Length: 65
Image (cartoon, rainbow, N blue to C red; front, side, top):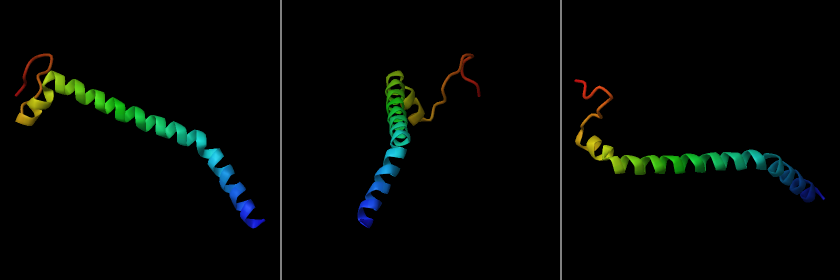
């Protein structure tokens, strides 16, 4: 009987937090996908290579020293 009560309590707690946990997992997955897309865009523009060489990115008014 005590084991059944413990199982019911655990199931209720898991059910209560399932929505929040689902939203958290979705948010983390979105951030990972966004970071991957940003990395692909940087690689296409060559910014990653310029940063590796130690060059600064040019702004709207050109390079500032």
